[in-house]
Image (cartoon, rainbow, N blue to C red):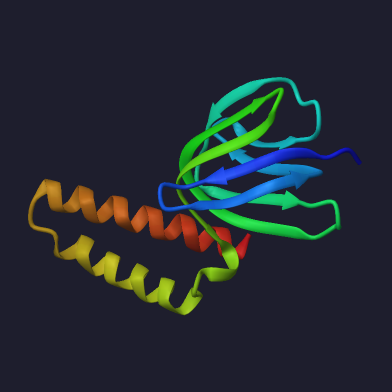
Length: 133
């Protein structure tokens, strides 16, 4: 299979840059797969897993939340609001964070505090769902 250039960038760092055979990404309208010579497209991303298939047959999986995906003649770029390798997510710590976020939500006294706690809980649950997918 033919290779193309792919980059995944978060505000903190460049998580991936190299030639790949395919990338599956969680677009706003659903998952989509990019191969060499894919038609140009730009879309927003929803929370989920990006699966990168290298030329050696090795798969790399990264969790992303939010951002943009851009496919053009020079390759495929994802600019993610948050991105990290699935292998770096500690399920036990994540479960504890979810429990704490649920407590924060139930203890919230104002609408603003409830909204902030609800958003945090939703983000943590998205990450947890990505681990079990």
